[in-house]
Image 1 (cartoon, rainbow, N blue to C red):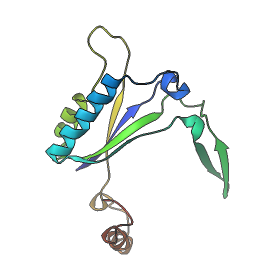
Image 2: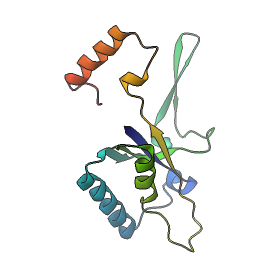
Image 3: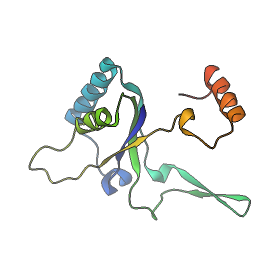
Image 4: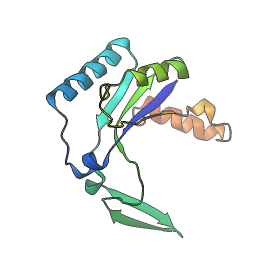
Length: 144
């Protein structure tokens, strides 16, 4: 099973008013290394704030581009990992090990886990489309 493990941003990180300390970077690097050595880490990156992004909104057959920052939503993804594990429980255990503020620090850090649908999970996808998708993945154009 593959899971997307996303760490959510804060108003401070969105505004770039907060920069992680060297200790935070060290803890995150050690965590990433632990997952890599365990063979569960497939990918992971931090994301720039929404002020550097854009939204593409599709409506009535048209695509409209709106530059960031995005103020409508309350939460944004600050970074992510893609992990491959044998169960939901194992994914939760890895998530719980993510570096976080120590006891006494009331800063809230939220991490979300979402299982990534595999082709075999897509019951209503026509088999010929699944086969085309498998071919793309075999060529290295799509991860999975």
